[in-house]
Length: 286
Ligand code: FAD
Image 1 (spheres, protein in one colour):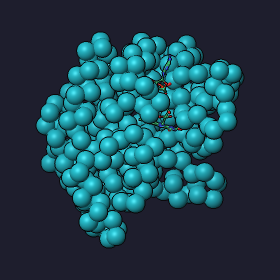
Image 2: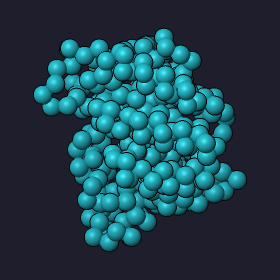
Image 3: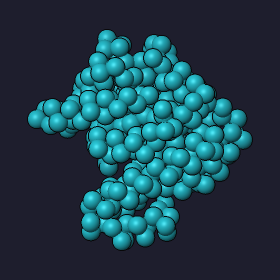
């Protein structure tokens, strides 16, 4: 099924994310985690693509196994440092494996490389290329706190509008920890004339020490309320996990209450986290 058709249904939906292994010896562990998450019957599951395509084949394999488990997969695909031929090859693999949803991304620029020499400079070019190459449902990334490389929010939104016009059917946001930032962003997105669904991405923080680094890389701001949770509980992993899940649940309930239907959870290969979120929302999904 196409993700755009799932999220256009007028009811709450939840998707989870897994990331593929870097090496074959970890494949079984990731595959088992993906199956456990698929058993929770999310509306779809996304599978990330390792920086610079390092996990390309595993992304396809894990996405295929999710499909075999009866859940719609959304495969991520990055284009940094990739030729048109190699992307075409990947699209062919997606088609052969019944994967019809792609999150089209540029990827982070590796140090010491020159984007001007690449076949694809921005994700918008990948979106156009995928659009011409088959009947895929295409998503793009967006950034409520602007992309770290953008000089201004305005510039970021102009580039986003162009990307959507190239053929995005929906957008998924970078993680954020303050829903008000998302609501304000959504207004700006709509004011730009971008009408496709925007799926908020929620990260249940289970490791207080890692989150500061992730925020630095992604540009997401940790609200003081959440910083205090990290300060208080990061030395107690179980308490931190419980508090992180509770905070994410609260964000999700607030999003549903404010009329957002589709929410994506960065569940990061943790079935227990996905399960806890699902349990906390059991009456909403009855
Ligand atoms: P783009 O849309 O190309 O934007 C990148 C920057 O270029 C932005 O600042 C934008 O404003 C600017 N820009 C765009 N078009 C133009 C233009 N025409 N002229 C000038 N400037 C322009 N990374 C991975 O490696 N694997 C993953 O699986 C993955 N999944 C992700 C999922 C989500 C939901 C998100 C939010 C991010 C994900 N990322 C992933 C990270 C992503 O690859 C990086 O954030 C990357 O730096 C930007 O990718 P993009 O697709 O947003 O790029």
